Length: 478
Ligand code: NAP
Image (cartoon, rainbow, N blue to C red; front, side, top):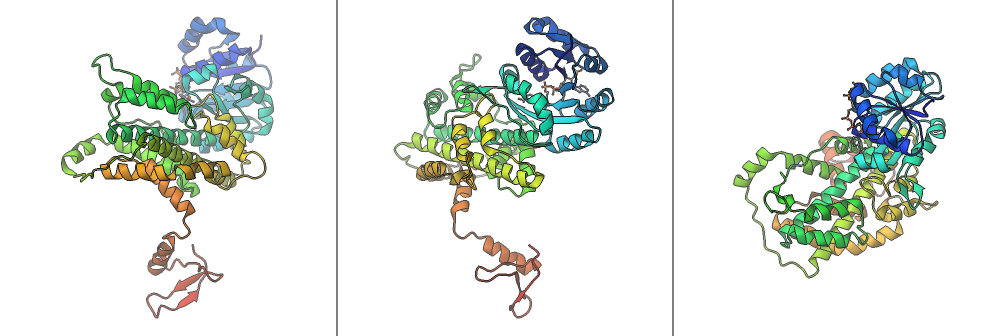
């Protein structure tokens, strides 16, 4: 018996992907650096499908049908390079190495280029959905060559999540495109969670609504335009009571949020691409601030808030829902804008409608909204920005009065709402006729002779600030 795919790295994610493949009828060869994990998987779940046990990478490679497909699911970073280095001499031209871990897309680009020189395909695959998704059907974002997808795609599509029967797996684009899109997905996930947190904080602090009652509100919100996995599980967490103390669970959890790094990668990449991804950036910074517990404790005793009082407007809960919706939409718009910038930078033909379509199920940001986003990018009339798609321009405009009221209320009461407020600033910045960037250009020209363009003439200019302040034509050094 030969296997159609081999999986090396059988910690929770690799084991669950291997089981998912086997449950879908594929024969899967199993390998792990230490054989205990292989045996543990076989002992517990060996009956779920056809597995081949191997103890070495040589054995794993020998057990595979050609062209061979070896899926690596080891710790991201140096371990991936180490496994590739060991695998490469064992493989033949046309074989496919798949990295389904959370690798940085630049690493994937480097690995793909190096292996292509040896006529091996290297496919970086973004996988979202956590442990459960890996087992039951994740959202899958494969990069690498189109040719490799012809061989690998059907398997990945079969094990992926399904939305109305459609596989949440599409070929994204060459080299690191899959891992890039997965990274941006995770960035949006950070922003999505932060705006939920801000809504919770405003409802609790400004409106005095306790977690158990908020759970009911979030459950209600989950039936409308906000309907999504994250809103659903927010209701679940807020409804949970701590066994030990009888308090709301959310009150016994230390308020400093961890991160594994994909949000940070998204922001670094956004900065490099010059893409204004402020919502995701503020979400990452908010986690950073939450983790500075020492400084926060000192600040509580030193820094005055001078909070004002606010009479909450009628329908404040609905206002918060609209502020959450609008801020969330901005984060998606910014993430998609970043994808567009990356497509130009890296020469990827990213199909935004397809990307939105495969985030509709299996992944953490799965939401009803994504179906509408998909529709906004389908066809030829692609909006320059998600917010400019007619349906979204209308729905966000409808949310603006409430959004402003919520941000103003939060600011008056000293409740930090970094993503609500920065998203509103982005919205206003995008639609404003004149920005103070004109003054910035003036300052740059004065101190650094960086030049400027005029609103009423072609060309690039410089004012002789240190002389008679006359204007001269200049070489463009923007
Ligand atoms: P992990 O804890 O990241 O890694 C453990 C696995 O890596 C073990 O199989 C371990 O082998 C192997 N390993 C570590 N160093 C190695 C080396 N130098 N050579 C060979 N094998 C090595 O496992 P995980 O949590 O299952 O995650 C796997 C990947 O999926 C990671 O990239 C992670 O970021 C990603 N991930 C994705 C999601 C998602 O939702 N998409 C969720 C979690 C994780 P031993 O047993 O021999 O130590």
